[in-house]
Figure 1 (tube, rainbow, N blue to C red):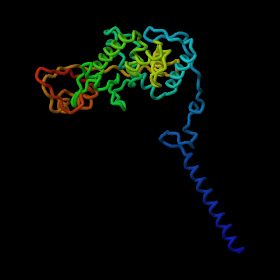
Figure 2: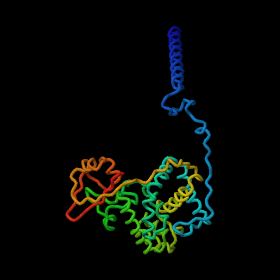
Figure 3: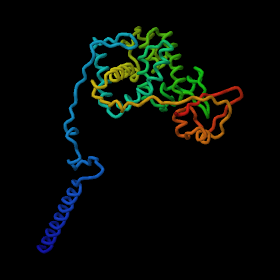
Figure 4: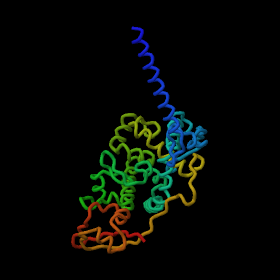
Length: 314
């Protein structure tokens, strides 16, 4: 029995020595300088001081604020706290917000003249920011484009949508129908703030809420959770975009995305092979669709008397 216990003790000691050696070897391996520069959790040499010493700051709210010229009642605690929430969330959502800021210099020059032509307040460009991050995203409900229109609404406002063509992906045309839609909402509610909120929850839902709750200000209404945050998200991006450095975003002059340079041609005949068409025009299918994302197939059927404007990169 004593011999058996002795063997067990010796065996346990050997295992312990082996485990200790393995751990020591593993740590030695993990603390070697790596070429990839990524922090792996064990290598302090690739962990910058800035990473260890990040400071998290509170957000200073403005004294006054408006949306589309309509005053925001910052004297109400829940308004201030709702706005503060969206500013904090998006100020510390670094990767997404900095990319979104960089896109504004490419796409705001497209959106702003169309808003101006339609006599809409310029603040609506921030609505496009929160709807799509200024990308041609498709939502789970199949809303499409910078302004996130469903197929039915897009067709209702005159956009061409079928297998080969979807003009919801055309930034200029979709911005125009967004203006038409917002003007219709304003005619109904008499407030740009309510119109923007109704853009999110729907005109019918907004009308029922006003009727049931006997109030007609966005800031007084109890609305669906997403709509409750909607105007504050727009306002947060308005503030961050107008003064990015104040909220911790520093972008070099060369870092802002530039507007696309292109020439426009008119096509009046069916294009059976858009890839070959692109090559014939000195580009390729990838670039053709980057400049014309409304082209949804590899061909473009054009009926007699119809035509399309196609952008080609310079």
